[in-house]
Image (tube, rainbow, N blue to C red; front, side, top):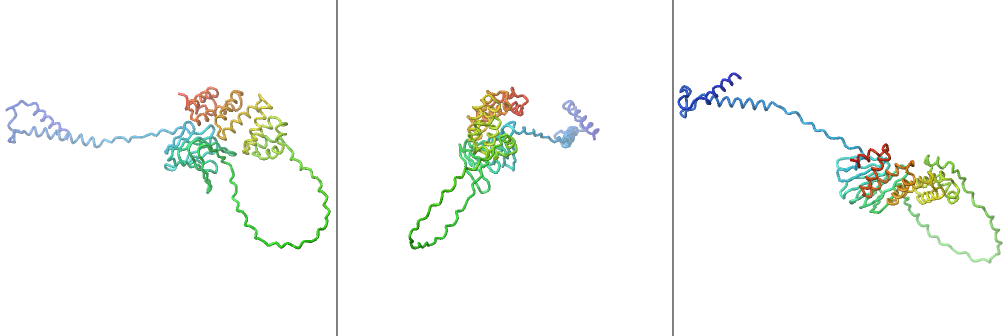
Length: 378
């Protein structure tokens, strides 16, 4: 076929370069309009070449295009934005898991601090212990929880908390203790049947000697105190045992016990949601034992108490004071990290990034250094 195409091509070329007029051989003229067989041969050759080209094009196959989807960013490094517009930001050392089912997402918070901004149409739910948070309008709320305590603060909008058949509605400014136990609903007993009482006839009064007064009984002795074991009890989760011993003689304990014992009492009171006792104990430690490690830890504990009740400005002041008083303390990195988180929660991103850069400079190997470095450093 190739030789035939070459022959037809040569004939077509001869026609194209042949001299005009009578120089075309009459043997090739077979139509009244003067069309020659060579011209027809040229047309046939061009058509054959087009067929070959088209067949070659049809046989070529483009290789499939492979699309590579980039891996998602590590959790907790940047705020997570869900499909419904909900923005989730987890705090330092938080244990947070997101489960999705289509367009519906569930946020499970095992422990730590989480900040949630949800639009009006948000379908996202947040699981905090036994409570599930549903957004009923455009809302902004923050939660801080662990195995022993938990607090939810509604900053904007409104949410609804559900636990089985129990439902609670919270509006902006509300603070809710996630570990509060619902009081059991008691049904009042039925009224006793009415009984007619017949008064007996009066009898003459007979003088009766008054019984001797009962002997004066002394008050039962207070339980013995074992303050040396309070730190051990708190570590073992027996905070209630510490309060059982301390509360009946709280004034004496605050006046007589040393700083480590009082610090264990402050922790026990915080774990048992006795914030008043914890705050009073921390103030006593700072007054009686200034410039000690226990006084600095008491300052940090006061920051945690303020943060749990939603007093973010007061919490920031305590954390900053801890940093000024004890810049090399055991909790210095944690105090600075909490300042970064609280400034971000308050919406001051510039201040949060400035503190994050300070954290990276002071604690380059800290647990949050890499996260802050990716978030705020170029």
